[in-house]
Amino acid sequence: MPRVLIADDESALLDLYATWLDDADVDIVRAGCGVEALSICAEDAVDVAILDRHMPRVSGDEVLDAIQAMSDCPRVAFVTAATPDVNIVDLDLDAYLTKPVSRGEFVDMVESLLRRESLSETADRYVENLSKRAALLESESPSVLRADPIYSAFEAELSRLASRIDDRSLDDPYLNRALADGGQDHPSIDP
Image (cartoon, rainbow, N blue to C red; front, side, top):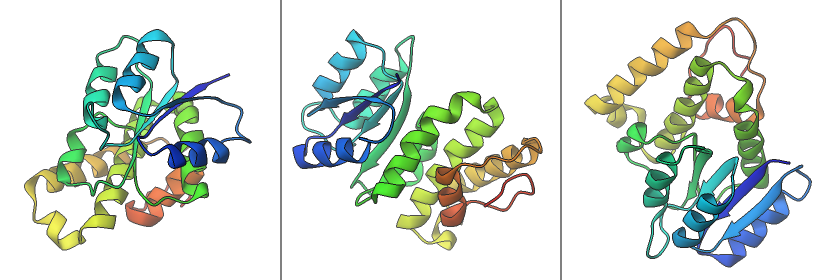
């Protein structure tokens, strides 16, 4: 059974997220801070790590950096109140949701992260970047983002990836949300 780590310093959110995943076939592990999250990841394999960015002592960004250095690195998502800036395009992150999130968004994201192993590397990277793009477009207007050279290069990379995806359909509710929020049309993807 896949293991999902949820790390947030708000215990009510840990309880809520765990309740939302009750029907999913996953083993849920909770961490109330970044130190606990790192300890759990070091002791036992985790398939998906869901992190808040702003936790005391050790932030979600620091946990992400430490997890990326591990040999058996899980899929990592931020579910956070932190408004993303354009620098998230450089984070080795699989998904980004800005709080508050709905049950549907959260469950779709976790299930999508668990399914990603079956995607080609190009399709996986495309979905990862769509998530970042959707998060950025929630916090900033497209015209402001396009004026940023980092975002412009990111858009070019997203277009390059879209052109390389094979004709198989990526039928994924989380992907569909990302497309609706900021993805671009691609003939091989059913939005």
